[in-house]
Length: 459
Image (cartoon, rainbow, N blue to C red):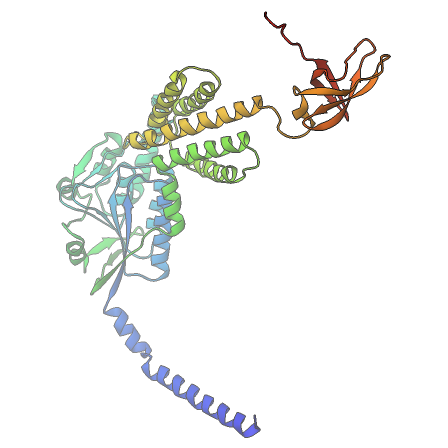
């Protein structure tokens, strides 16, 4: 291609690039226009507390609050429906709310929802607390649980925990301008409040039947900052953005579900059991290992009952014994019952009573019992099978002497499986041509034999 052609192409490309840049510059709004556009709409970031408060939910809320602050949102709205949860996770959420530069509104919704126990602490920490009609909050007395069971503690320790929780609650309810004395009764006396009682007692500032009604009431509303100052919420044309859990958070939240945890635990045990009984298959071992690690992660977060694990271990032993002994299914049925009972008491939280469902327990225990018993019987049967390859397969086979050994003892020949082998004979052993013998051992290329005993004919 000539130089002039290249020059024309470069000139056309320059003209097109300049036209494109000019179009972008013209179409892009000026900084004043951008500011005016953003001021006409207020971004409301909506987060959700639905279920027990645990580390995965705390991570989701803390990240959501941080993201709203990074994006300079106009308001953070947290809808709450929870029976409570872990103290450490609750404190992480409260700390993120107290440190937020963006106003945070807690909203107990929908009708019939509750902000109990740890949820009450979170509601009281927000800049503006709101409730739907027909909701409740409070009942925030701390409890201690071990293995999913509430345990009784020493009175001194109980007072220590209660006083610590009460002081923590007062530290920010007073700064928010709320009735800290009434709020403290939710901890000391486990008192709960309806929406109207909370409003009359100056625990919440708004009662709203819907999100739109709440946002309308919040526009222009003043609230107390922790430093004692007063600020005002400005919601002009609010645009609500619902922030859901990330894929990682959804996956981890799915893993800690009691039903999923039980399934992962059993799949992990079955996979490793299959790999140990049938080495070299690989796939069951890989799947079982991954499942078991995920189950151990969930076990770290869930209140696990040791008795449930013991019943599941007993079920495994009963399945193995069923495969080894002819019990006509008695041990197998006992194993299924043991596994189902173990699953039902494996996880049980005092706040919700939530645990492994009966359908999940039966749906896992029955197939597991069948597979475990079949695999063990295959293993036991393979141990009793005669080797089908190598020299060991000759042991027990019957052959025929084709060349006797000398009378003084030595080596003769035998035909077994159509093959000629050497046969060692003791000096006192005499085997004539055509004698049928049974192989007792194999030593290299020489066989150790014994005559086949025949029953005398009956006349």
